[in-house]
Length: 576
Image (cartoon, rainbow, N blue to C red; front, side):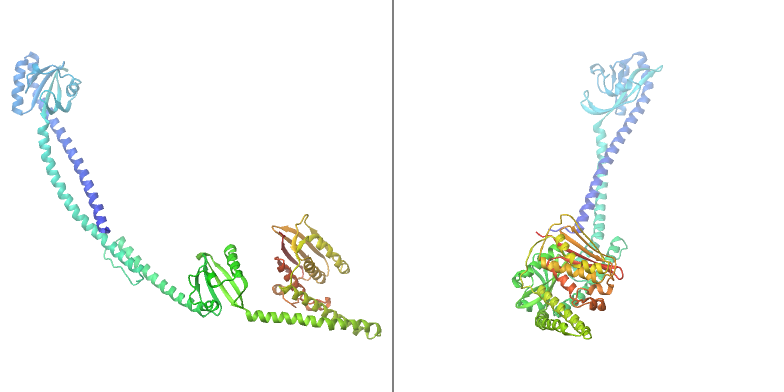
């Protein structure tokens, strides 16, 4: 049976009172008994001092027979045993026994103390009268010398009878005090337990969701302060709970109204939350608490989940499911050990993008043949044209070359984006590859008085990739550096950085404005349009560069200040 706090308080208080009452009772009784014996000892010592003057004359006369009669008469009158012993321990007189039959008393504790000129007291069993007795002995002096010892004694049973009566009175008093204390313990326990029980009941109501529960205590003490704090806390929790419920309803409304599909998965792979859009995708009405693999079986999604748990970063990937293409954005929820996934249906966008790529690729293929024919006819006309008409032929030829270069770049970009085309992969050393490319730009650099500075760290490990594409990457970057630098240097450094090869291509050219940095890898985006037209740039070079870097699982980053130059940093992973 569960013990209430009232009975716990009552047991504690009563046990405490009972323990201390018994302790005080025994200590008081022991103290009173000791005090009583000390008082009796003092009375016996005073009695001895009174008797000594009447005993000394008989000791001086050695009249021990009359001394024994005096002692017996006196002892009978005062109901106290009196004994006279000489300094050799021989009993000269005794009020209750024949002194001639008594043994030597010199070794008795009280006698030994008296012979040493101090008052001797002893509480022990008497071998003469065969009872426990209290003894008090004093020395008898004559001319400052001890001539004998007087000893008085009382039966301890008489003392115990008196102490027993006293003990009974004390016991009655303590019983009355314990009863009063027990009643007081009940009152105190009730005064403490009632508020606590009320607080307990109120907390149970709050735990059930009844936030309107309040505690009202009258006494102004710590429990009253606790009750007031409880009331304030409950009111505050109610406000927070109402606000949280409102926010939850809003969140549920927002999640339900999302056109995108949303799903939250815990660490065990179970779906803890999803919206209606997701249920429509998987065509399953009840998906909560199911393992995601039961309703969404896609290897790409498994890999995405694995990366989210391992990298603890926001990740996105394209996933095909039920003949639809989705852009899946994943983000870990660290505090809840869960991850949220949002699926954007990009099938139409993907189809449009594919159509656009196909259009560009097809248009580029179709344009390449007539442009080649035009250039051939221009070269034929160039031989038959008069000097006055040569200027027009040169202009047409320049723009034709630019169109051909645009078509070539578009075809290259289309090939890079086509995932169905198989790629050649081999071990490639970066340093020799760059050294082979640099001579292509020596004449252009010499015409501008540009200085090439190339430095490669010794024993760089190879990377795995397509050598033709990597050549195209470095040719485009170095060509840009030469085209957009009028004076100074072009620096190329290749070093190892952890598990990657870092290549830095820096120039002291015109630089890139801050507002253009985020767009330089877009197709046809040109920072300086007049210079691009002059150099024959297509605006596709950097877009091709970025595609090649991404195809090799690398990264590219640009740092630039307008008027001071640019630095392209490429990191390519070392081959396995």
